[in-house]
Image (cartoon, rainbow, N blue to C red; front, side, top):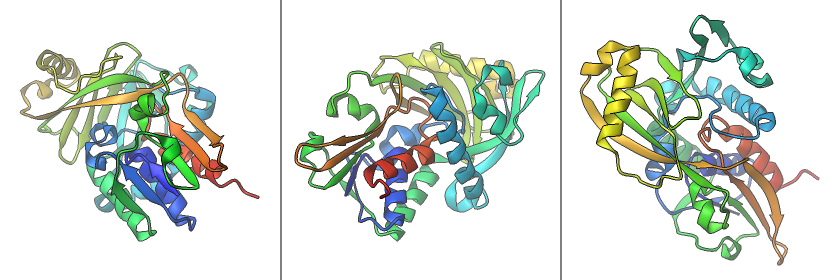
Length: 303
């Protein structure tokens, strides 16, 4: 079987399938370090993803996995870090929130100790785990899903699904980030909504990651200097020491937004099977393991 797409959704799905005994190849147009997954902030939190009724279960299943992986942070890149989501209360979230260990109301919002994932390290670890299970990653560009030569094909192409499927419901939500030298901040902070700008910072081993933006239907991958300056200024309003931090790099990624995640089994006319697993918006990492397990079940339903 072949999984198309080498980001976090594709690699996670491939790992589960390979560890269940399937012979798995991943066809990826770009290496994992050049995917949207690689530039993500890495904080576990359901953001810009629907439908909420299903997202909660996918996210909680993934949370359990990340909590286990956080026992080996040097190996996996996953750590548990304290922080606050400002401006929200428990009654503004779905039922899933009541099942997040330690999530509690504080004067500013909600506090919790949540997984923070160093994505370059984590993606490399996923590839290694896949290789140990016998899976392989191949650099291949797919232009027609129906022509992929496997009895079972899993489509995890993220933003690429817009043209590949084609699915015009998939739209980019541009996210720009700034990485600065960490002035000593050890907790994460988020104040996000569905406007085009938000404020968050996440401590990572390589620096302090500052965000962000949510610019709908914007395909530009070039960092905008004015946007970067505004991001730093917003974060510095929360922690003034950020204002003087040296900028290390800029990042831009395109979240694959959709009205709802597409997790669906599609029989092909010749008897083969195509499984879709895309449209995860701003929460691909957050729901990766839950969605991958469902996709694997769709690919090979239990008798």
